[in-house]
Figure 1 (cartoon, rainbow, N blue to C red):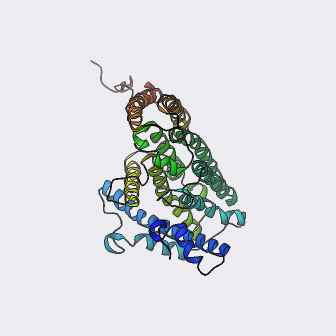
Figure 2: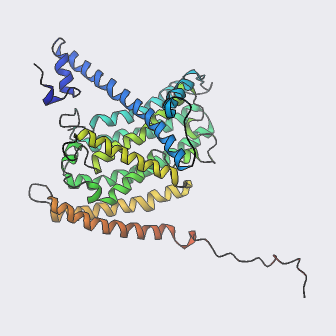
Figure 3: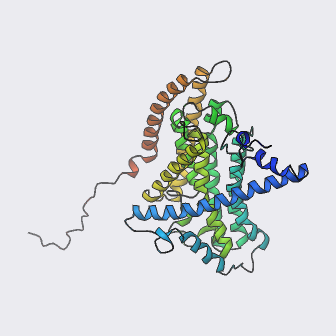
Length: 399
C-alpha cells in the first residue's frame, strides 16, 4: 500500500512508488523523471500563456485601453491564437547561416528556464529541492542564456543580429555579477547553499532582513530578462530586433516563450529566496502561499514594465558597474558583520536577531540608495535653466 499522504501524489517518491510496482528499478526511475518533466514543462508553458494574457490585459489598463478581447471570453484564447499563427508561418533559415547552431539556439535559451524549476522546494519532499548546491545550480544554469544569445546572433550570419547579440551578451555578463553577489548575503544568513535550507531559515522573510540584496537581485534579474527599463532589444535604435532578427515561425515562438517564461521563473526564485517560499499561515497550504507570493512579485515586475522609461545602453552598463555592483558589495559587508554578531554557536540566527538586522538594514538600504542616486545622477542630469539667445530679437525694431 502506497502512503501518498507522506510523499505526495506528484512527488518523485510517490510517482516512483507506482512505477516500481511493475517496472524494473532503473526503468521506473526513468519513467518517473519523464512524467515529472512532462508535468513541469506543460505546466510552465500553460502558465506562460496565461501570464501573456494577464500582462497584455494589465498593461492595457495601465495605458487606458482594453488589451486582448476578441478571442474567447475576455480575450483568454489570444495566446493560443498567437501560437497557431506562429505555427503556420514559414520557418525560414538564411542560406549562409550555420544551420545547426541556428536551430538549437532557441532550445538552449529555453532549456535553462525549465531546468531552474527542478531545484525549487515546493514542499517537504520536492525532488532535488534539497540539493546542497542549489544556489550554485541556479547561477550556473541561468548563465547559459549568454551562450544562446551569442550563438543566435553568430549563426545568423547577419551583421545586425551579431551586433545585437554582442550588445546583449555585454549586458548579460555585466548584470550576472551583481546578481550573484546579491545572493551571498542569503547564503551567509542561511549558512547553506541549499534552497530548502534557505526557506527553512526564513523565520523572518529575507526581503525584510536584507532589502538591499533583494533590490539588487530584482534589478539585475530584470536586466537579465531584458525587461523594462532594460529592454534594449526592443529600443527604437534596434529596429532589426537584435539577435533574433533572422528567426521566424516556431523558432521565433520558442524565443518568445523563453522571454515571457523568464518573469515567472524569476518570481519563483525570488519567492524561494526572499519571501519564505512555502512558509505561511495555517490553515492555507504552503503551496497556495507560494503561488500567491509569485503572483505578487509578477505584478510588481509588470508594474515596473508598464510605467518606467527605457534606459540607454550606456546608462544600463553604468548602472550595473557603478550602481548595483557597489550596492551588492555594501550588502555583503553589512550582512557579514551582522552574521558575526548575531549567529550562535550552531550557525543559526534567532528570530529576534533577524528583526534587529532588518531594522538596521532598512536604514542602511535607504541611506545607500540615496547616496548612490545622487552620485550616479549628479548635477549633469539636472535640467539647465533656459537662457535666451542673443539672436532671438535680432529682427526687432530698435527704439
